[in-house]
Image (cartoon, rainbow, N blue to C red):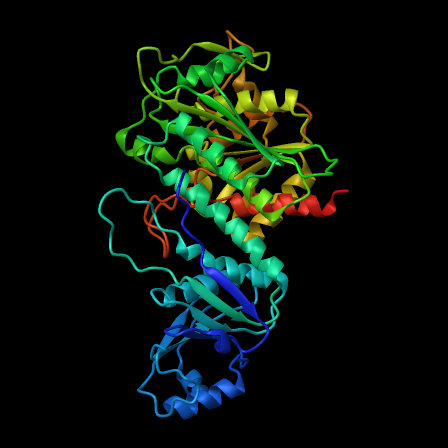
Length: 510
């Protein structure tokens, strides 16, 4: 089974967090750089003065902290008087600038985790925090712990801080929520980072089976459907995409059905292209390099369902993962071929627009068989979304205003931001085909809105079911190197926003 990196332990104490600190731990003091408020316990400041001969208040006055997320390390001299038994502690104190918003606290938490990297733990003094602020801080403390999986000799990299003691009134439920979301993010990242030489549709399906089996809960189930079943149940487009590969397609359906839940399930559909050459419409080599992450949507959906189970949410949720490899072979689909999706004939115009084909198959099937309360699909779908919005925002299209607003708000709370995009009706005629009911890309070369066209195509297969389409082609990968991730690394973008949506839906359910 896939090896998801372990999350640091987060301990909460209402007492002085330093009393729970262990040998070698870092000592972290939170400071608001934009105001006089500092969170240094007077007893601690006095003890530091006696033990090290340091006036902390004076040190803070001299500290040059910038915006939230900046840190400064104070090198400590030899102990004068070991009044607290600190002889084994490192000779440093970390000053960390924090802010007011959840985003600022998330930045601060990540900076603290990096500053405390390589030590057994950190003890952190905090001001009173609202639950949303605390959630941002804990997410920030956890997220830097992920490392890219590596085959072969291990690189010498700094290890994350494995244990953090937080002082203050932070509810354990907040920590549990943050851990579930970040674990899901780590799972999605690890799946997406796995080389496609390993990550076949069969392998991905087996990971889902193993993860569900490990949970050992009858409320969480998984089904894996193979080629014969797919042919029998009308997955013509998915089978067409997979024809050029020696690795056959799969459909994975993961269900979380809590006891006593009376709601219809919220159904999530994730694009699972385990590698994308573009097929006969072959990609350039440079565009093909990051395509092992073209199944990031399926990884995000699987992670969100499993994280919902970890939280014990009351809302039933189904994850539908159409898995295929878009390769180039003697049996590859061709431009001009026609397939049938949910009773609609579709002309294939560009075999490199395969993601919308497997999504359309899965959406049409889910709508017809699962009786979903709403459909949300997640996909690294179009380069146009990346060109328009860059790496910081996902594109969101929706037919339901309430669902769209809820997902946008959820994304803002977790630093996974979506930008609402229009379903431009005037572009619809460009999907008309002379040989089928529908074309899957614009037939009019003057209509260039690639992300909008893809969304209009998918909308055809959801009918009147409330629907949101999330095109995460930009934020699913880093692009340039970030503070915690290398270039072109998977981010797991969307897991925590979807989990937040599911939690909110569960809280308002019967």
